[in-house]
Image (tube, rainbow, N blue to C red; front, side, top):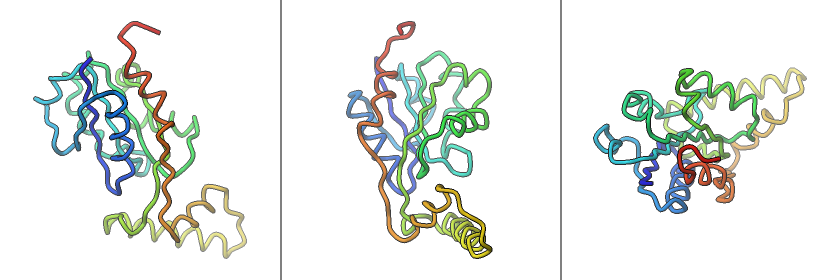
Length: 182
């Protein structure tokens, strides 16, 4: 099976995971902005990865725009983020990003990436500063922060990499399965 791993990465964490997946699958790998419809036709399996941004998967529009030619191929999508994986979060991401047909055909995975405030684009830095202000204000008012909120505040102080190569195993196994096998 000829496989292409496509990614949209802002700070490098998603790119690292995509490269690990491509290496394990002996697949081609490319940044999303270098892939067009013609290139997608050459593959039996397409793996797409992008960071979670709000509840959206950054760059997933490539899959959505080209769904007509992809729907009969094996398509796997992974999202990366700084938060630990939670099944309810993954379900929300699936519902907000994929049509019913796509939800039935696309396997969705989530991997912890990392957080590096210094590498964020200006617009993201502004949004993250608003979140930081909101969390600090909440704490000053005496409201207890949940573990994710506390963890997020700690991430501003230093770059943190949560990526682990072994986390990609389920996706690699799913991509390697032939259609119709368990």
